[in-house]
Image (cartoon, rainbow, N blue to C red):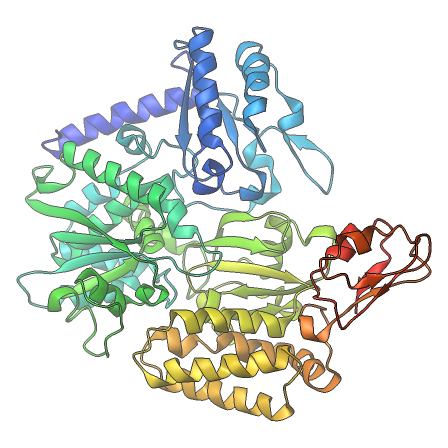
Length: 620
């Protein structure tokens, strides 16, 4: 157990040397590091590790090579990943069947397995180094520091990767000095609102109370979002350290992690990290002999999206139904159990140690004038390079989509990118050169949100997209306030009518009016931002709404009631494959003669189109 800062410093030096020697090979061993994020683990990364361990034992290589899991490598569409140190060779799309070849060819033979290297689509060139891949070139890891590098279940590797250095720096400062440092950094909340973190801490610090609390919001509920989960899986001690710095700054001795139970790997690694920190004397009473006391507790959420709203989250921790509270008073004044509390999300807290370690000026030098630092995005949808990215604020949408994301698959046309999840809006082709930051996205009709970024192409129907998000909001509304409970339901009914071909032009006026009413009168952020997908799609794709209403057509051929499958007589060779695959027996015709689809029977399943080898069937 570390009793003072001198012992801590000595221990960190030892761990740093050990980690560096592992990466450089100076310890006389090679190291196999596998991606241990949820995505890769679901693609057999655990079995891949077991096979490596079997081969190491079989060939008695225990003194020559080590193997362990790290956090998410980020490039999810190319996982599972295996990295070999000290050469820094990166293998992608690895299967259990590839392990023997990697072990015999690379580990034992010293030769690269070229077939498993990443190939840049634009040039066809293979690369063995992670930093040479375009996906990584424009990224800068601050919140994701250590993720994909260190063993998240080994505190020694975390200590060798700067863990708790920020806390030690903070403990040598006055509490107000720590808050001033965070204020000077320009750090804003990464959970969606973008409120200045230092100001929130200042409000809580200024309150006189016998007890204060720090709460980490890990209730990541946006569809397609996995930023917070990946940070907790890859470097949970960074978030713990951020909480402790916050606790020291405002005078709190207890912190609460609120994480959804659907994140079992993150929860398990967090529990391990907390226990290891306690065993080392970095959590608990009189930390490092400084007189600072801090303990951390975990509460699991049941998957309610509304509990991402800070006051609903507080109610849930207290054992009440997860519903938002009227504000004021704000949580910094009366929060958890009516005591001053600060609620920051995972990514925000992960940035705090960097600020204390390197100084506010270093953090503030990254990003834009009003949005400092970096932002983590879960990039998904119709994009070649699906994955987790961390980019400096001010990076353009074009850079995110094309340079990092690799563009749209199959030569399709970019149509929109939805940022901010159900609370955000759509950016279009005219916004591709817009810098990504808090204020700019809001001015364009979207928002940063927690960091989801879903790319859409020409095959997406924007009316259907708005309907999808409104269905989600209706399911997740807690029902406490009438504008959200009733207004979102009415908006969904209108969108459903339009996508089914029963809409009228008056519906567009009603959507406009309902959007305004729900936005202005809802109790919490869920209702206040619920209409954003409708507002942005009406603004940028109004012609699609009109096509659904007036022409009774879905331009993207997505809405089933407004599209049909048609057989081209000139292309059809009468192979009968479509008819044999049709579950509704809607296709008729003689062999070797053009077939016909009975539209009254067709259920629009698309099996005929996918089974046709001559591409004779199309959607209209």
